[in-house]
Length: 249
Image (cartoon, rainbow, N blue to C red):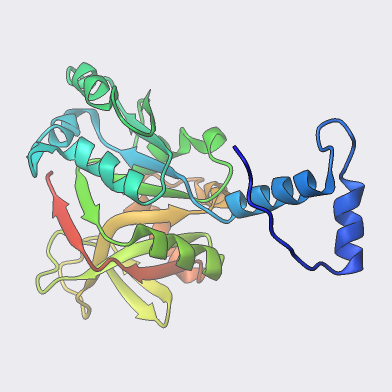
């Protein structure tokens, strides 16, 4: 395919650095060097991986009908529209596992099902520790979100903190984790409190930097153990997910 030609201006020191990368074998020209390192840099500033967490006994919820097709197919369509190319489904072996495999067989993005026996969702998430190199999205497998995920990832990358939590407002907070905000930061998080002074609740979708795994010692639950710790460290950013939300659990 013929590539379009453009003219750019670079300072001398940067141009010398580009030329130093031309080795005559892998990178054979200045243009190829610029294209290679520009592409690499842009890739590092994007998020293309999602981890769906679902207990084995709840796999049936991913197969429930939503808008004429399964929840799982709706999730994969949403992620595809948002620039996601890789999805890991972390679950346990269950009688529905073959049905899940059938649902993802014709997916337009890469999907891998990982079966692991875990004590909690934090331990389940830790099973992908060696598979993620850059920031990644995490969502419950029985939740449907439809909003501007690209905008959320942009904020996560700009804030450069360990985690970003999707938020929404609810008149009744029963069954939700609640968050107290100070500007962009969640400074207090409580999982399903009986009473709360806020109507800002957890939307069930998160973005993590891989370094977050360093905090997983003695952490079983993301909601009960990890988020309050991140809030105290001022490493938890909030993002309002204006759009659709459904929990099929």
